[in-house]
Image 1 (cartoon, one colour):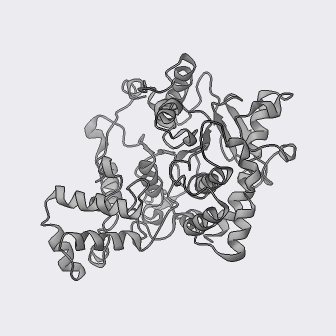
Image 2: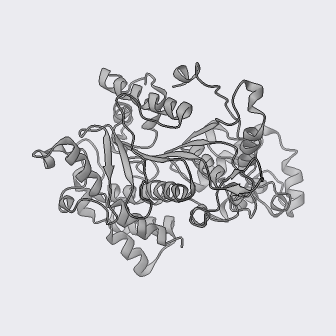
Image 3: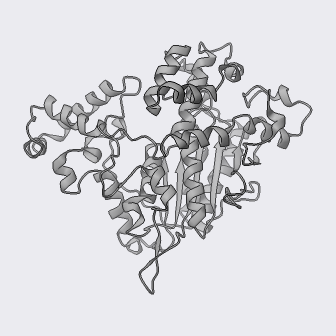
Length: 452
């Protein structure tokens, strides 16, 4: 993608106090009373904002044509820049690509507790001020090692997640979903009055078809384990939890169980819940909220193809399927060692990469082969229109009505890769029915109500 953009735009990489080997770490998301009082929590996000406020013209760019792009943890940060300061300090970019992660996971005590645990491990425990002063004297490599060790305690599966954004009452004044619902996100400053006017930002957001498979332990593969796990990530119990689980009948996921992996339908059920709670539903919520107050279009896409399956097969992780990071080879149009480097794979990669380039330069991701639909045209009257990329049904738009989509989809297996279930339909119909079967509108309405 960058090879295509380089002649059209200026690409600037921003350091955000993130350590690649350890994801979000203590350097960017330490939390304590002293840091909060000094407005120094979420320092990684503040660094990003400062970089965006820097005179981009010094790099040869146009400060009125800035596109920010983030994938995974970078996407989380990008979405938080949209709600920065509750929108009260204006927008410092015009377009955003938020790819496969949103600002949906807030554990209020986690960054604070993790900071205290790292301090204890480094013999820096004490009151908040003394603790911080001591940590500032610790060699970087020791601080990093303690931070990584804490990540492995918090999340043994991935070894990350001990430090993440926190609601600090300043940069992130509230839960992002509430800020979006209130219209408290970045607005454009009127050059004449300096008053805030409706947001003139355009946004692309996405999720992978099996985006949750990498984040849930394979051991979560029974009804009891699924119930406990979903309760932990949604903070729900009792009848509310039962109602949420009831929206995802295990029978709908049996088609995803294949002969070459050992996972159960319960595993795919819980990974879909994770995907919707942490990725898909927040994307629908954010793009809808922005569309209500923006003069610019928003776009949604779901990726139904991966070039990483051979890699995951070799690593005995075939159950990842179209999992997290499946988007990266397509976006950067790159060769993947041990991956799918076939001609069709590169053809799809070229279109995805070109779409991102087009969006950065013109604000419209459509190409000669990809006609991207606007996600929300009649904001409250209709459901979203989602651009499905790749898969056996081809790429194209699917509009989900207010009730969630085509009634004809009822009773069909949920697996969107089993083309046999639609053998008498056109590809467009197959694609529409498959996405309708995921009941995104219905499920997300309930999931969004949990944070209301």
